[in-house]
Length: 200
Image 1 (cartoon, rainbow, N blue to C red):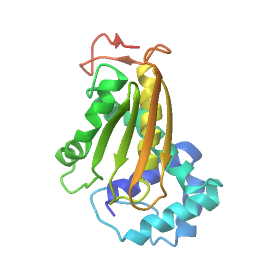
Image 2: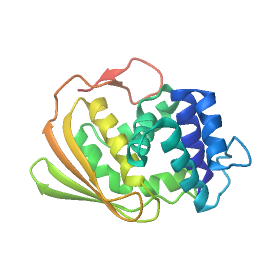
Image 3: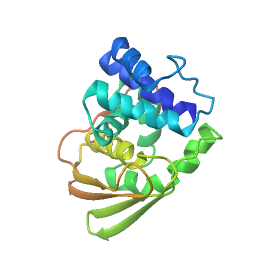
Image 4: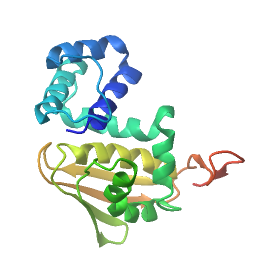
């Protein structure tokens, strides 16, 4: 398990709930050290232990915990860089969805040994899609569901979504776009500095 993923769990809990809940999760998971190194690799059972300990400490089922992590990755000020990277995927939410198939390759450009599951977007009907999430990273579909919910808000789109499948193996996210301009989206500019442009 790539350390960047486990490090993301750590900073999510610390930023959202504080240092003490993370300390108790570390104890509950039986970890030797309280901090994960983003560039190291860890045994697969470390991931499982952290998710289970988080379920006990935060009183949330694993799918809800993983979805919250995905939302954090886009909406928290500490993750502005990732949000900007995702917004380059399209000028509206539909274009963004079609850019997701390139996400694993873009992730490897940033972190060479980070392997994300393959993503396959299928147009089922007008404004209805399914996103097939390949095997390889437990629960990634739930994390991606949180990312998609946050990005829909970012674009100002009204979207209904549901993730099917467990925390292991392949998953499918059903996506129904109700309205592309339901609310005003968050400000976004192509350059990191300068006057921002509003997109809704």
